[in-house]
Image (cartoon, rainbow, N blue to C red; front, side, top):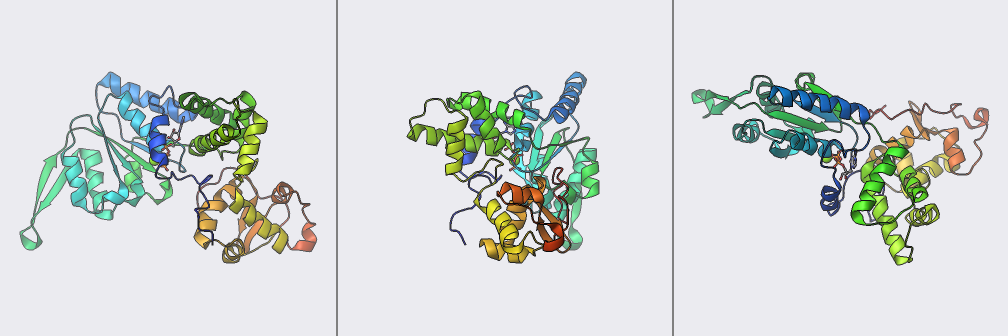
Length: 357
Ligand SMILES: Nc1ncnc2c1ncn2[C@@H]1O[C@H](COP(=O)(O)OP(=O)(O)OP(=O)(O)O)[C@@H](O)[C@H]1O
Ligand SMILES: [Mg+2]
């Protein structure tokens, strides 16, 4: 088992000290927000209409994988509506009373952001239904037979919920959002724009080909792009490189073991175990985890989703298999499918849908 976090570089969750830097790099307006054209367009209509009506906007749900800009968009929504933003998260609301305290202190037009909203407790969730729909909550006072409920009117507010697991949200909660925006992975060209912006703010000099090189290794995720940019900056500083070109960016990221497709040491170890030790699979997840010296959960939630999304690995009822593309990525020849017991043909690539098979 490695003693350092294997996802330091290409994991999509932010490290603690990274959060401060992220705050500095966050775009502050819809205009500065790169990519996500569909969601951005829809959201700007929703916000414009609320401005014209001079009323609080409909509740907004933002879903999508980590690091794609949900928190950033929530902050932009408040800023665009000139509204005060209140931030909390699902895990912080364990009792209905926690939520009641927040709701009862809201002022008119405020934006309440609940991050990881799928992790809220059941009773709190039920209180939220009524608050969202009728702008009212019932506060329970006292206990047992003497308990009474006191209805409390709430001022109109806008709830913005964010979730990485939209599928875990109960239907009644999902239905109460007037608008749901699903964030998609970013294209290389969009990531280049994110990088350009960040490099400008951090005063890092990179040329066009250098940006392209970092972008293709960023797993479609702005958070990772910004992180790789900082590592490239370190490398350039130490090596006395004034302007990072594609060669320098590539060398820097090779040093950090992030390859041309954004795969890191663990991702490659998984593919190697599959291809070299098991001739492409199928192999059970726990065997795979033992072979690469990681927890089963790390392999399943951290390495696998990206490998599946890239069309390098497929999940089948019999276990994990490497696709022909995986062999080629490792510089190996895909074996003849008849000999190896593999399921022939590449796995469907397409975006990973976040669900377990
Ligand atoms: N569209 C974008 N344009 C420019 N930068 C972006 C964009 N989206 C995200 N970023 C950058 O990526 C970082 C991570 O974004 P953010 O914190 O909003 O992700 P998230 O979806 O809330 O992730 P999580 O699910 O982990 O909470 C931000 O600091 C921001 O700098
Ligand atoms: Mg967030």
